[in-house]
Image (cartoon, rainbow, N blue to C red; front, side, top):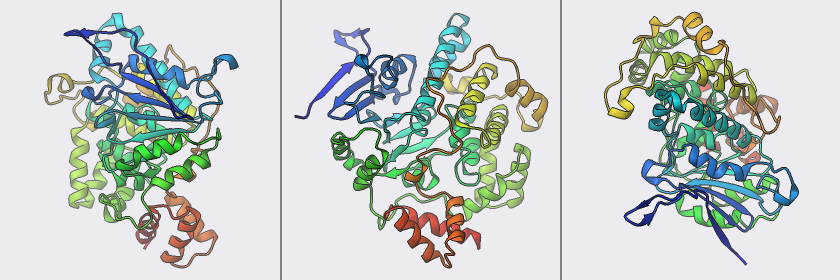
Length: 441
């Protein structure tokens, strides 16, 4: 018989006019699914330590079989994480972080929060139990850390994804040095430096999402996932999700990251310094290039240079080493989240220009290679350079070009047909393959 049990994880209750405060995290068991529901819709499910403490313990491996948590429990076949309201997770609670940065008495709490979040993000990327992130709504910053390491990342027509840190004086964190740097060509660099919001189907085409499912089908999808009887079987989970995803003939409502824009991104974001990227955009001179250039120049120069450097280093590093690098950066980066976040004022960056920062002296030596006090503890030693479940997403540009050459596919249509067969008629294959090959001409 189907059952659902809700465990309010936050035992401390605040009473406002006699009404108990809703717990910020709901934990449910529905048949074979363990569900983690972010339940702070008024702040767009921005996470803080209270929320992490609410759901992270359920994901961990336990020390004894008698007290098995979800990673080891035979009863939990898959884990679903989602958010109530119009956001999956809009990021970390930046105002809370600012208060902890400014108050020396709260530095230990901030350190514990950062350490815990990075330990958790590593586990999300290495769990044996299938982990499904439903990105139905705003998914930004820390929301990327809760979703992008997952083998299954479901986008809907409501999805709005971004890593907005350069616009607030921070850097793209929670694993972004890994998952953004693995996107085709330099698309992740473009997204990281500009804080570009990628919406709906574009999250699938970009590689951020693995599946596109209309929001009206999510309840039925969750019900079917709960009926899965096998554990550690990612292929079964993939097949179930594809049953509810749109079919290959679906016409996308949002499809912008292709064609000339992608060609400009590939040409202009390949350089190793922010100044070279700005120069290339300026020389290109198109409306898209100039608008992109102006966007980057409005961002924090320090954040832009740190983000670019950590994406370049991250592209050659493993999953664990990317997280270690970001964890070190959090211990060295200045408290530069500016007043516009809290007081809605225009930012005043210091230094104000990209050229005021020397890459070696002001960025690498100061932030990347300085000594730090804390080091990460991982719950397991699983590591990789490419995501082990990338086959569930659309094929990458490198994969398309490699398979076309390997199988001597002569035309665009032959290549589309080969990949549609390989991906079992997955939506987005045709658009992706056609765009990649057309840009080669």
